[in-house]
Image (cartoon, rainbow, N blue to C red; front, top):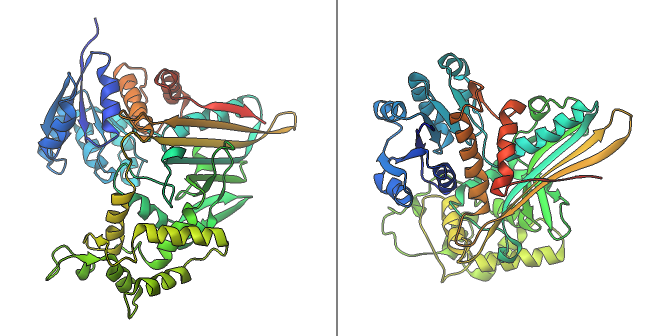
Length: 454
């Protein structure tokens, strides 16, 4: 007889529903969807039999500890900075934890306590990080078992609109807040390239973008994603002279994004004139915002556009025309398009992008992930191996991004509850005993990788 399990799901964002739906299919799980505001929890829980809503403030230690203690496992899909609060409550109650987030130093510091409590604290089990680990390690371990070694490893992943929905100058759309996407453009990238440690400062990140060839139908470019320099150790590929993990975008995105960076739109410093509470705050035309940002004496759209053109770095005539067209499309030099006061130049721009670049009815997203390995075989020969995961969202259903983050999380949760993943401590899916059971289930959910040896 199957024993019913209880799960506490913290968070109700867009990745929570595919996770919830997967876990409720068996009929043996009961799930409490918990948010700080009960209305948000009800909005998700009320869609499904077997789910109930609860109000839990994770900053309230007593309330969090009581909620965690009342369940067999807790899934934390809240901001990563709050995972340690959840893990501490779980350690105290000896309950398992699952997150999709990278293991932060604060989370890693709880490893010994989690082991002592005998609990699994599974992390990095979404798409990136998550599915990327699984399919990378599969090939890495196959090569090692056959006596070969990896001499180069490149991994690029992107959540993008499907080609037919990429109909704007940035070739990008948002299914949630634009802020995180834009802030990522300020991150420094570190990686190994031809045996040298490369560091690209945030302001120069878009300049480092280069073509990434996956399928001929896609005009994709990629650039480094934060610090991937430690993946030679994490993946145990010490002979890899190149080791880089990066982000995919459509051609033209970096040049347009770099123009926005050069204009100063990634500045998140609070500005009184942009505050919703500014004295006498009324309509704020976009040409006034751009004038203030650039410190110009005039808000004349033609003069503003000339100043913008001076910030465009590419000398390719067609690309410059595309960027100018994009600036006009955004309306940021227009006296008739109104800006939403959100406190900073970054947030005012985010509000405008969210007006123009959200997914429309019937549009679908796409995720594409490619691992590329240069392999030296045991007989001294060399070849290239690739692993590609490509998925499209379902119009009216789950987005590809939500599914590829939420479903692996749900699979890992079920495997822990079923006693098929037992490694205690603060872990990521780096060991075959952890990742292989997850990989065995993924294809039945339509998630797989196509491998090729060149």
